[in-house]
Amino acid sequence: MRDAARCLMLALALIPAVASAGETWIDANPSAMRMAWREGSLTAEHEGERPYQRVTTDGKGSPNLIVTGAPLAPPVDARNRFLKVLLRVHDFDRLAHLEVRLGSAGQKQDWFAFPVPLFADHDYNFVQEGEWMPVTLSFGEAQIQGKPDRAHIDSIGLVVRDTGAGPVDVDFGGWSLVDEPKEGVVSFTFDDAWADDLVAARMMGEHKMRGTAYIIPNAIGHPHYMTLEEVQSLAGMGWEIASHHETPLTDFEPAALDAELRRIQSYLVSIGHAPGALHFAYPNGKQEPRRVRPEVRRVFETARLAGSGPETLPPADPSLLRAINVINGTPPEEVGRWAERAREHHEWLILMMHRLPEKPVESTDYARASFAKLLDEVAKSGVRVEPVLEVWNGCCASPGRAFEAEQATAHAGDGAARVAPASPAP
Image (cartoon, rainbow, N blue to C red; front, side, top):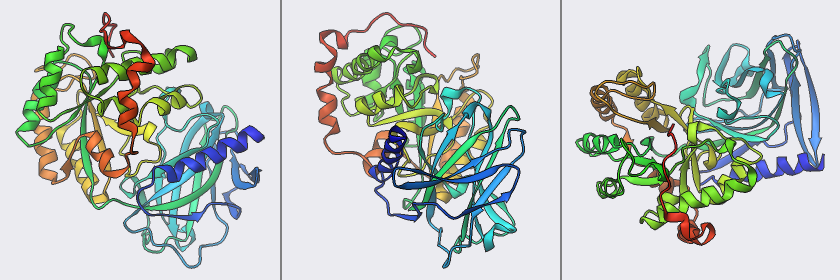
């Protein structure tokens, strides 16, 4: 129990650590919830001195709903704010559905529903097994039931359903409302250091847009990838150069992971990109909370996932920046709608892309002609477009971290800047 209490305190400490916007805790010590649907059970629990509510499903696939015991009086105004909740899941592999609700009039008929994304690949999820996780949710993501009044929110609810293979416990540790930024923003990111990044840069330049290239050091100079000279040319066009790897971090032994991350960071420092050396993209979007995330947090200031939807500013956890993967078949008009939503709801839409061939072959390819239409759609939305580091530095950056990146070579040894033979890239 002592370790569990420490985990809860660490999760709570993480919440204000990245909050540059105003945040108001509505209920930091939840103790007055009730079961609205009675197929499962609800218990009041404690870790140390902090209470939380645990909903346990019936193990048969029935949905469970817990809601605020009595409507808040007075109601709270959620306009121009986004939702933050503290959650933990046990037996995650049996979790089929997780949804947070905010409502007015006691959620009898009117609420906003915020589904939490769940993926079959466990390591792809930002909410994972047995760890307290702060989760931020934009009203742009909400599904609307009835006519909820965002200016008069008086209740919060949690819907949980298991797969039918056994019960699931979901712990609820409290919720807050956080001021939205003044405007939304879109960031284009390109993974792996493909030579097509230069094509993207020229096409985006016609719209006065710039992007972020997450490069794999081992790929530089190999066929179909950029040379070092091309990387520097890309940077000269105003693009940011950041860190990436060809192997999922979940594949590394704990003792080897820190040295490998330092090696990647040191390479970027050695070629003149210390600011980008602080920012990372997870290979294949894979990570986990006990080995990988702590190491990533020690080395990098942000780390981008490969999915899970739009991000908030500030993000709940900068080591888990959410993104949307633009792949072969993604309609440019749909990306335009995402951009419009980011503008309307003040979201941070991070687009993840790879190659831009004339004719796509791989699922991660995106046709060059479609990319031209996509850029037109994003430009038409009127949303601001900025690279990742610029957005982060304008919102949430920690002073002094650039100096730490410049010292990274000392941690990795003299061979840090050498480019090894490339492994197959994702």
